[in-house]
Amino acid sequence: MNKIIAIAIDEYQDDKLENLNNCVKDINSMIDVLSKKYVFDSIELYNKYEQTTLQFLYNELYNELINSLEEDNILIIFAGHGEFNAVLESSYWLCSNSEKDNITSWFNIENLIKFIKASPAKHIALISDSCFSGAIFELYRGGGIVAIKKKFSRQALTSGGIEKVSDGKKDENSPFCNAMVSVLEKNQLTDFSFNQFSESTILEFNKDKKQTPNFGQILNSGDKGGSYYFTLKSTDENILYNTINLPLEINKDVKIDSTFEIPFILENPNFNNNFVNTFIQQLGYSIINNIRIFITEDEDYSISRSKETGFYLHVGYEIQTLNEKFLSLTISGSNYFGSAHPNHYIHSINFAFKPERKLTFLDIVDYNSYENMESFMKEMVMKYAEDECKESLLKYCTYEYFSGLDFSFNSEVFSLYFTDLLPHVMFPCGFLEIPIEEIKFKI
Image 1 (cartoon, rainbow, N blue to C red):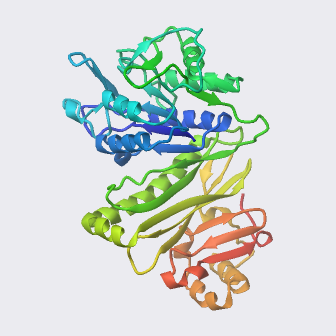
Image 2: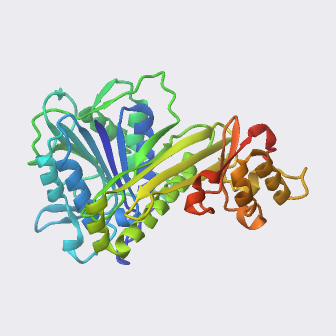
Image 3: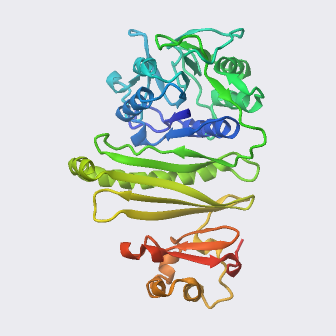
């Protein structure tokens, strides 16, 4: 399996650490080009405070690397602050809860190297866009190295040596990220070795910048002369989006079977995908945050109860419409946390383009041919709801509910979701499907 583990930290809890501007943007740009052009089966994104603390990253990276399989190829990408201790000759990542003056709160890269060395995965590559990141390997610059896929590899590319590096101008990518994205976009080799990628990135990098990217084998990590490879997708694939996985950030002692997948919309000429992905990721993290609050309110109970009954959480998505004018998608889930019944829910998010803006139900539906929106809604309920559901749905056909009402649409159906408003036992009544020809769009 080809995996990406992507970590981005823009905001730091310690006031002594300056917040960064572009780490999340850089990581999204890398995910974009890698998803679009290269073969990856799993993408995990860590960019919120709770996911980027020292404790969380230590546990996640340990578990991901130690529990990998020999056939796995793992690419780790980090963007954030870095530090170097000259006395110990050690490099560190600064996590979201790191303290500038407390070295014990920094992520020691030597620990990551130990995880990498112990990992069964055949190929592991690390890209680190952080200050003082170049003290982790023996360097080689230039080509001439023929990598062998069957040999184990442990390689890294960093944005600089033992030096400060540029985060770039606000709302732009870092110079290092720009160079990497450019190289990945221009590559035409079906099998693009990490060595070739790294050398090309250095050649692409602006020679006037006061930093020098470095690459090489990671010291004491189990490298045996092989190489990580980026593998091109088939050229006839027209990929518009990919799937990323969000971690739950909960105590590992809580036994839960979980999947949490949301879409990552790829760069395209029709609209700003960064604008769209920001809202999608915010929705995903808001769902996770609600789960975290529930679990941690009584963590001891959650641990014991989960062992008794088995907790589960499964969240997925469906793209309803994606074209040059609209994006409409749903994120739905089901979970069980030891209560009397499982929970089910559905959320929607909708955009119009040129210019990009997020849409509410009131933004998109033109009801001017009716007396008001309430009369339009009541007619739709009477025409298309199941008989046993009509009375319940009519209670919510008032203006106070319309702005926050979830909806989605495709070429055949305009769907309204009342599921969050209805009691649990009425969940099947929460879906109202209206033929698309009944809907007059404002835009």
